[in-house]
Image (cartoon, rainbow, N blue to C red; front, side):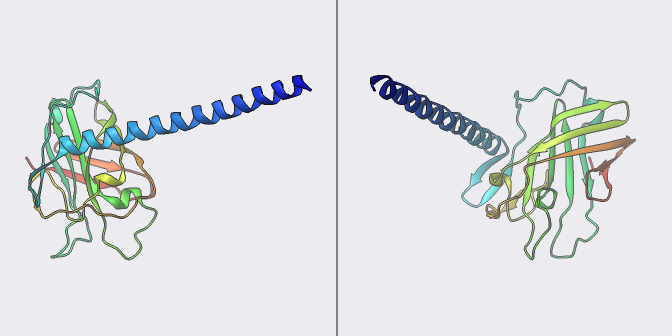
Length: 199
């Protein structure tokens, strides 16, 4: 009888220990994600005052691309074909020495837009690879990166607020071709985007 009690006790301790370990592991993953969001937000969205979001590209050391980007330095703009006078949804690529950023909309991380305006974001490019005139990279985003008004490397938006709608996917792969001052980017489920160097 004592053996059964001891065995049951050991099994219960193991089950509780395993559950606690899983919980702590999940909490560690969650805190790592929160820390990443905070780092990106403080680096990219420094509040210049209570109502203005300023974009600041800083010397982030967390991502080492392993490729030279100096020949791409500058800002490239893709003009969204369905822009209106009141609503601009252009995308931008910005290369600055060893840093690269993508400015876009929530459409890239949503299954379909369902009667609401998109959210706007800027995210640091990850896993950047460049082989002669071919480029590929990945974006990883979270809900805290999306704002209601466009975010661009060319101007600051006053009174920009968090978008507040949850995205359905948090990463996307991109591949493109460089041709002089033009980079044509392809990504699944979208037509090719032609980014033209602005400055």
